[in-house]
Length: 237
Image 1 (cartoon, rainbow, N blue to C red):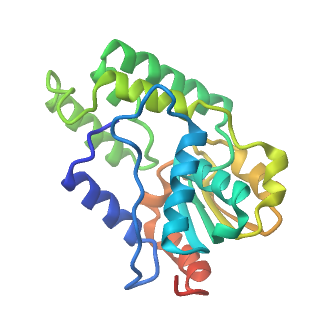
Image 2 (cartoon, one colour):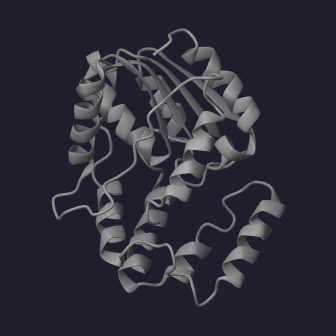
């Protein structure tokens, strides 16, 4: 939803680095900042697979939120490209509540209502003071909500891709990578779906944090890092 500025990319890269093994290099993959009409989950997966192919497979792949859906589809369609797979606050599909949230965001973006769009994220954190800080930031930026946001039509195309067909459950049996799924039991976007995903994958382990929300990779960073590093240090790539 936001423009991919150098500052934002650096911030996101720092958050990812915090849950990876120390001194591990990585490549942060984002989304097309100007997606065309044909933008879909399939086109995103094809792009990611092409990048991995250029790097030299197999690689360790980490997907956060919707990025986990992308990563799962890559691992299912191209099992030879992925050796280890980590899904943070993610699953193979959204919960019904998560799909409803994304549809609401799509409608707000189509209307250009960035203030309401930002307000939808208030309450995502488990800790009240973080929600309070987010609410305060949104209040102080009232009237300037569009600053830093992408063009509404770009957001709409991206969200339509997000609502594209989820990963087919039958295809999950094709994922050969060892997989770690980390989620909160009160995830507002994926709900109980991580449990279903873990049950369908051949080599998956599920770590759930009681009471934590969709923001578990941020709020429980050190605990999440302990689990991700245990899997990813098994190989150097």
